[in-house]
Image 1: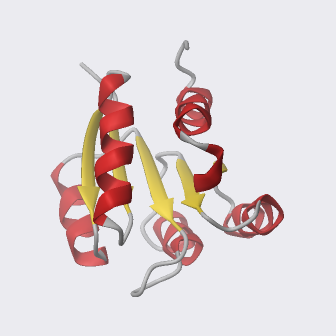
Image 2 (image 1 turned 135 degrees about the vertical axis):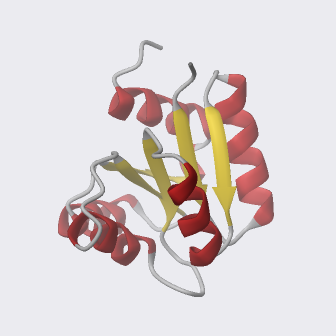
Length: 123
């Protein structure tokens, strides 16, 4: 059974591209553009990994990640995916106590490498 990844991003283009990259690598991918859609997807089956955009209209991704960890006791790994610079992402990641980050500028190979690293999958 393929590992399941849940993506949340307010950009349909980013979601479509990221989903395509991850599905080609053999992952099952669910996507959401809003917190409501994200919660609905999360409730259907526990994801093996959650990938969260940082800058969204409804909520900052690192705040969402902190809430998932604190209030909802989510144990799935979480990574941030953002166009913010690496230094800021590293700080947000540390503050939210989540598993990693990838800048959107780093490209699909970096995203796939981080996903595999966090999930412990062979490349």
